Length: 231
Image (cartoon, rainbow, N blue to C red; front, side, top):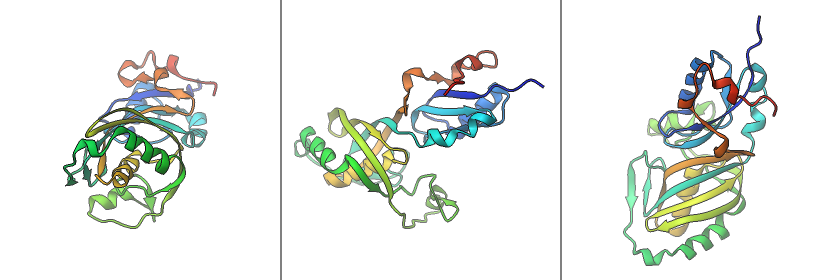
């Protein structure tokens, strides 16, 4: 019996499908059932999804799950949503004069408050499990429970653009960092509220979005040539 290919694919996920949808499509394309990914991307988010193909590679997936991440995030200032992102319901909004919140103020606040090791409370709408249940399953039932903060590390935050109420930032952070929670906390610190509009993961460890491949470009005949076999 011929050995099935094993290795890793750097997929550039589009906004819309779940990470699990991508895995199911890859199973159909490759004909291989044993496939997993290193870190979920929410349906509304896009970017790097690091995928292990085959039994030997999926055994190593936890090594890649723990790698640092890089994101580009669009944050809407002046409102909050129940999910901390654009898919939720707006629960509060504030009308503020943009001059009150300058780019320099935001930069100073983020540098002082959010760079370095810290604790972050995970959002209710997340896949994190508490007592065997995923938080988002409880949240959809209208249940909110106390969550223990996670230890995270944010190495760098850069402002890419700012024009009230839209803030675009690049974040380099440890595994386990919730960017929706960061948007929530930025809004709290500024005092205006905020939620995540869009999110793109641009890197997992050394694997950059420039090296990735769109799922639509893969088929039964060509997928294996994009397989990374020596990592």
